[in-house]
Length: 233
Ligand code: C5P
Image (cartoon, rainbow, N blue to C red; front, side, top):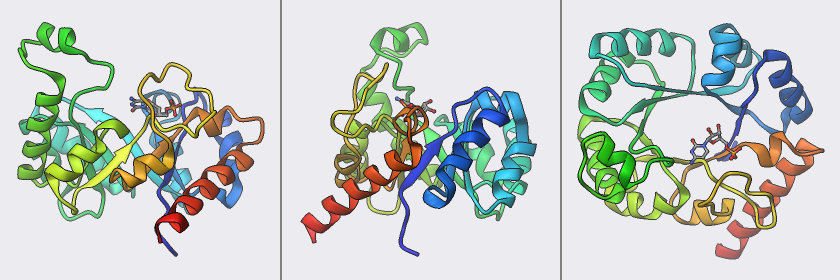
């Protein structure tokens, strides 16, 4: 099967709601992101259930704790069979995550700087630099630590790809088809733009999950990507 770049975010507060979307999508999606909200509601039992039903799971836990705790939590997450797990892009956390992952196939993705942070948020945390500078520094550190990929805004994807080379996996949320509601997302790109800028995977949330017909919304995105791929062939 060819590479499927679409990851659907299950941003729900119960397994019932999440299942409603998974069932509506049927076979049109096979990779789901479970974040803090659904994890708090339904936990690893739900993650394992998704995997048992043949899906891949991106565990968006954004771990950030002392090394020993991160190492142990990552080891448990890896045993669940999840495909991707996020940790914050600071050295101690990333090194502990790599130790915890051991020889499992789970990919570790680093969060460089949360996209909701601006220069003032960084100053509050004691960093006197531009967001872009800290992103660049953390991409380098992630690569040095042996992290597999980066979660990045689609507007950062091109610079990160140029900086880090072809091997790094780039996963971009904040993606919207032209004409789709942007909600609270201020800086968005279309799925085709994000792929053209070097993203390997796109996290799609509300454009699919809040659609009257999620399967049709998914198929429209796939058609958009196929059209783009054909125009570049
Ligand atoms: O906006 P949308 O509903 O498509 O968001 C999908 C997912 O991407 C959500 O789980 C959200 O937490 C995540 N996201 C993110 N960084 C952003 C925007 C969205 O991680 N800048």
